[in-house]
Picture 1 (tube, rainbow, N blue to C red):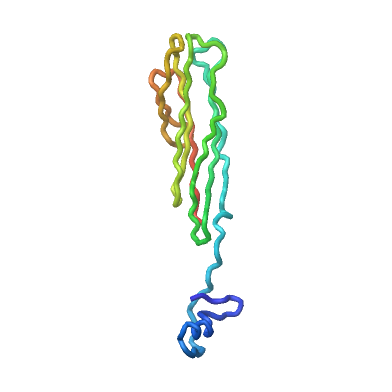
Picture 2 (picture 1 turned 45 degrees about the horizontal axis):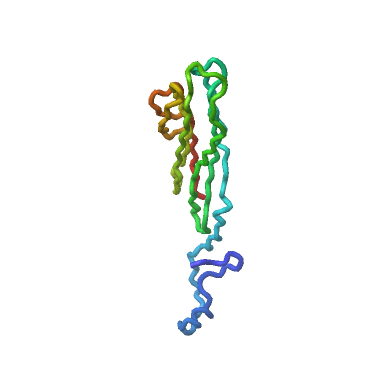
Length: 179
């Protein structure tokens, strides 16, 4: 049962009860234990976007001059829907690669580069995460490819690539709280 905090009246109107066929209804002097109805909640008002950082790597392995490099940006988002408390968010880390390349003169024939990313969207207060990384492989006559995998985590993460001369990866994490 809900109460109107402005008037102190609680319960259902006697007119409504009579209209529903309950006959004549009389007031009672018994105090009500009902509390005020909670107001509706605007869950989308809790939506947030958080800059989780820009991260980059430069490495000069097997270079006479120049380097190979990679860069990534992470944005965390908590999205809430509905109007009933508690508002439970959907958590997502957006992974945006900002650059991957090789410059200058390698000391071997050719460098092959590849990148990989992963992410995990969650709800219910569980952490979400995203990772990005790259690997560099030295190739004879540029006739090779790079196959790689990445682990999830926060901060430096492991990038696995067979015969790589350099690997680098970064991960970010966010948790959306209930409101």
